Length: 293
Image (cartoon, rainbow, N blue to C red):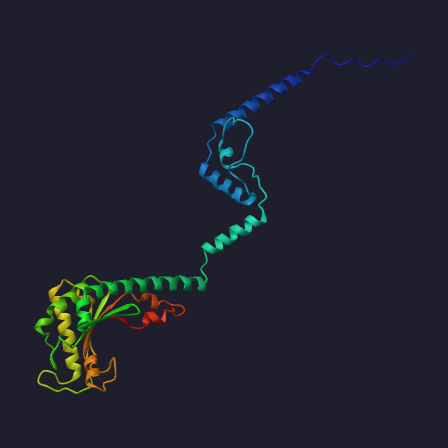
């Protein structure tokens, strides 16, 4: 006799499965509720997101083909990166442009320095031309000359008409000339060096025991005139007496000695470019040669 067939299970899900499903639904609702009420440290999250972006090459902006449905904190600060191949020519061009912009090589710095020097020399020459126009009549009469020597403008007051022999007193008729010179100095910038020079004939009088005293006294007279007639900052002035130590020409004739007897008013412009560290700047030789009228 055959064994009885096993009994079929009851139709439908077991009773315990319904209870388990209810429990899982309640747990899901519970965690959703916790997430909705949770607060997020935005600064800390941004710091973590930025670190991830640097590590994985994440891009903030990406193209989308669908209408955005909404954003969240994560979507704003963390999105998958999309890399695009960059042609090699573009990389080379970009690198070359950056190198040109940030070129700090000694050669580039020296070229820039030389350009600044040239521009400054041109400005000084233009200022000297303006002074020459102001003193045009006096230059034609041989009373003064105007020269440029590098960063300096030299207004040379010849002894003719300015000082009597062995005297440091300005002659009365020379005051209009001094007014023009003083006005030109007042309109300029930089240090003003007033230097007196004599010839090599020794002098010993009641007033001046040597050419040193005579040259210094003449320089003081010129500087004092400028300070009294115009409101020029006295801190700009430097007075020098050179006696016969800096002749323009050899003291071998009366004519040459007359040339060496002079007072020079030197307007010294900014020479800081020449004093900077680095290779010695190359200033055109024609610039340092005397340009005079």
